[in-house]
Amino acid sequence: MMSLPFVLFACAIGAAWMRQRGVAMGFWVVGLVTMLVLFRVHVTEVLNIQL
Amino acid sequence: MSADLSRLLNAIGLLGIGTVLALAFIDQIWFGDLPCPLCILQRAGFFAAGFGIALNLIFGPKPSHYGMAIIGAVAGGAISMRQILLHIVPGTGSYGPPVFGLHLYTWAFIAAVVIVVGCAIMMLDDRQFSRAEPMSVRLKALPLSALLLFLVLAVANVFSTIALCGAGFCPDAPTDYILFNSSPT
Image (cartoon, rainbow over the protein chains, first blue to last red):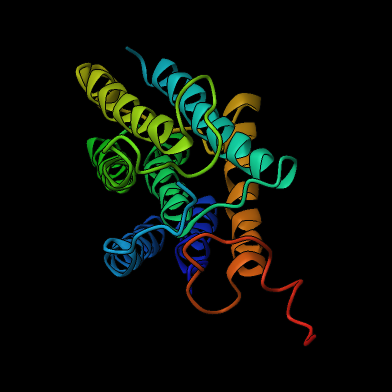
């Protein structure tokens, strides 16, 4: 699940490399939204650290 | 500023982002400093920001590409700031060892601010956007190296995150790679 943004950004870079600008930007938008959703999931957690 | 100079500066910027991501990777692999979920998302923020700069290299400089880089940097910077705020009260500990006196999430926030300011400065010169002829498809060595490094790091982070967290969410403070430690005891 946490690797999903990287998968989408890698696809975006690959699409841009193949000069598919619209597809690349689409992957980027979905990747960004996925990243923000994952941030929403983790934003309230407290890290289990040694004080 | 000509489009070629803009492309050179963008290549240097993308190499800078690639270097930051590579150093984080070296810290993880070489020093065994495993990233927490927020740390992983900060890396994703660098990819979101770097992608806008990568578009500048491939398709030529456009305000929309700089906008994408700024949005990505702001998202990554917000995640860094959240982690800084987790530890801002004295005595609330920290995550990972400091590097040159600051923790990696603090450096990540500084880098995000640098990306935003850098993009804003680059956008001040309109001449790079008024190129009549299309950009050359063939990339020179520096932009090509920057793009290759960026792509390789993105793919490496896919495998690294799968190894660390498996198919689900990452543990709050990972101590081992889930994928390599799944055998029953």
